[in-house]
Each structure stands twice: as structure tokens, then as C-alpha cells.
Length: 488
Ligand SMILES: Cc1cc2nc3c(=O)[nH]c(=O)nc-3n(C[C@H](O)[C@H](O)[C@H](O)COP(=O)(O)O)c2cc1C
Image (tube, rainbow, N blue to C red; front, side, top):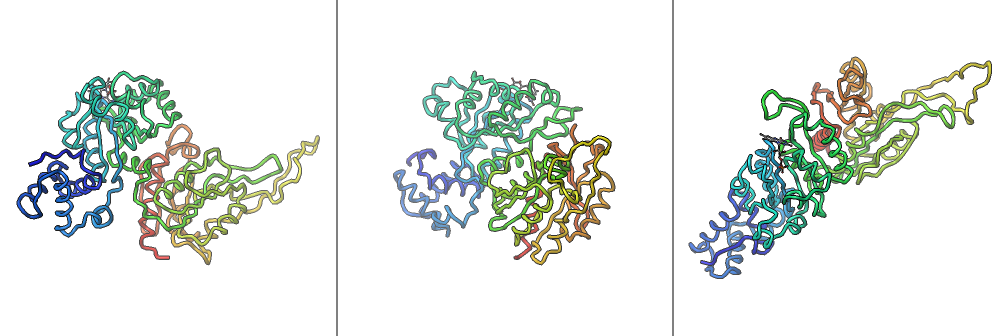
């Protein structure tokens, strides 16, 4: 019988084979063998040459009631990463064992995964395991004449849609940050023109070392994306802190986000998000503000957009960029924010993250208030600002789902529960913004981390401390889940 090289099959057949293999929990080679055996056993027409075998594969799919054309479309679930090619670089850390699960998770979603292993990585996991899971040759040596002739380090780095480094060792980060290219992994990383995602994993002392901090910052500026590391128990005993590699599914979610390949449960949904502080003028040069940075609200807008929502962000003055793929309206004052939000109604959901000033000065001065000798400081008379959350929560065009934020420095839960009732919200995301919240040197406001509780009529759900991006992703998923049951 003709021998069959998967790499030489046409793309449609390869895709078909990949799906059937994933369905049956077989490698592609094994699946091909089973199908060819079925063909030889006469379940389908006679086969001989390679092109006939390909035809036979299609026929077999048809004979099982699954036309090949449908396989490319709906009848088999299309993985979120089907047709995506991932080059996974495994570095030499204890977390290398998690890379095995990562390969499986990526392939489950339809991705083709090619792997480069550093020589240190091979001290932790074998090329045999990695090759079996990736169903492909594992690349290890820059100077391997066969590999270089067959694929070559340049093609290896360019044929992928995304490069993932997991675990990203302190060493690999240092090499890329400084432009070193002295083995296959570092050479591929520097030769690529594709996005790179790093999942660092190392001892907390290594992660917090000034050299690693510098390299992380440099790589960030160079456009390298990161997922994790997380805080928690390390694989080594008696070690805890920041440095644990993100879990494989978190890495998969980051891959999907980077390739914009994730599920779109919010497609067709319009969602309003507010973010940032408001500035309430005292005179043309002075204003009353608060410490909100907009990081949490902007992250939520971006996370909702990644799930396919048509997001309208109304933001107060912030120093961060508008999120990609989100229509953003810039305002200054609470009244402007209220007007912008009301103009955007109707919507399927609204998420009020902005730290809107409760009060404004009754009349802001038309000219800069001057210090006049003997007159003392000016008296500022304050009046209440519109309550945007309550206004929309009780609006005749109230969105199906209304989410408010409660930033409190004391009595967090009591205040959040009162807010839920009074303002007509479905969910309140409560966060402790006191200095004693224990989050980061700069606290929740302005910082990158958050610990929230989700307060609803059903009760209170505590979420662990996470990055603001992680809170955003989880909240977006929760909103998608809630909206499933709301028909507008
Ligand atoms: C038992 C053991 C565990 C290690 N774990 C890590 C780790 O988790 N992260 C890391 O950055 N380095 C770790 N190292 C050090 C790396 O293996 C070492 O820096 C190596 O040169 C990295 O090579 P690579 O970046 O080419 O994979 C570990 C070393 C040993 C011996």
C-alpha cells in the first residue's frame, strides 16, 4: 500500500483528518491508518494511489453521514483555533510539564502545534512525550542539518500564526530582551515577524529580581504579550509568591484573544460601559477629580468586545489608550457622561465602572479665581450630580442587564447591597478601595490588580485577587452567561 505523509495531503483533507482524529482521541496518523484500513476492507471504493486515498477519506466521511464540506463548516464543532498554527517554545523550568497539557488543549481547539524545546527543557520533559502530543517532529537544535534543510529556523518562526513561550524562563526573557540568538529557541524568537506570547514561570525571587523586571518591561515595550505569572504555591516545596505559570486554559484564552479567535457569545449585543473619573470644574483651570485610572473600565470594554459585543465606551479623562475595537466617547463632567450614556440607549446591557463625582460646584467660575489679599479662600457651594446608574436602572429604556460598581472604603458589602436595591441594578461589583485592601503599593485605584465581590439578589460571590484584565475577562463571561437568558 502507498505510504502516506500527512504533511503532503491537501489542506482540506488535513483539516478533515485533524477533526476526526480529535473526535476519536487519536493522532492524525492513527486516524489515517484506521480510515485507510476501512477503505482497504471494502467499506468504501478501492484505493491505490495517494490521490485515491484522499478521495477515499472524503468518501468515508460521507459514508458516515458527515460530508467533507460540512466538516469544514458546522456539523463538527469548529475549534476556536482551527486553521491556526502555533509554534510553542518550551523553556527549561519545572512548569514544562504543564506545556504537555497546553499542547493538548490547543490541539483540542483545532490548532496545529509545532514545538521547539530548549536543551534545558529536555531535562524536564522528553521530546517523545511532546512529539506524541503534538503529532509532529519536535525541533531542538539550531544546527541540525536535516531540520535546517527540511524547515529551517526562519520558516519555523514565520510559518506560525503565533509563537507561545511556555514556560518562559528568566533566561529566555533575558535573551529576547537583549537580542541574543545562540540556540534554536532564541533564534526563532528574534527571527519571527509574528506575535509572541510569553507565559513566565520562575521562582518568585527570580521574578522580582531587578534584571527580570527590566527584561519584562523591555519585552512589553517591544510588543511581546504576556499571560501571568500568577501568585500562589510554587512546584518547589515551601515556596510561594508571584511566579507560577498561568494555567494551560488561561494560556489558551490569551492565545484566542491574541488571534481574535475566541468564541463570540456577545455578537449582536450592544453594551454601554463607562470608565475613568469625572472632572468637575471649579474654574477654567481647576477641577475636582478622583484617583480612578480607567484601567478596570477599559479592560472590561475590551473584554466584552473580544466576546463579540458592540461596545460603546463613555470615558472620563484618563491617561490610557482607547481599547481596540471599541467605539469610545470622551467626556469630562458627570452631566456630560449622563447625556452620552442616555444617547446610547437602548442597549442590551450597561456596565457602570466610572467613578462619577457625587457632587459638582454649583457654578464654576468663568475666569480663573484669583487670590485676593484679605478675602481668604473662596467658598465652593456643591450640588449633587446626576446618578447615572440609578437613572439607567429605572429608565424606561432600561437595558436587560445593568451592572454597577461600588468602590468603598468601609462597610463594603452593606453599601453594595443597598446600592443594588436603590439603583435598580442586577449586579454590583464591589471593590474595597481602602489603603488596607492590601492590593499593590498603589492600591486598587490606579493599580493593576483588583479583588471584587459580585453582589446580586442571589447573594455574594467572592472572586480572588486577580489582574484587572482577568477580572474583566471573568466579568465579561458572566455578562455573556446572564444575557443568554435575556431576550430583548
Ligand atoms: C530543578 C530546576 C528548576 C528550574 N526551574 C526554573 C524555572 O521555573 N524558571 C526559570 O526561569 N528557570 C528555572 N531553572 C533554571 C533554568 O533551567 C536555567 O536558567 C536554564 O539555563 C534555562 O534554559 P532555557 O531558557 O534555555 O530553557 C531551573 C533549574 C533547575 C535545575
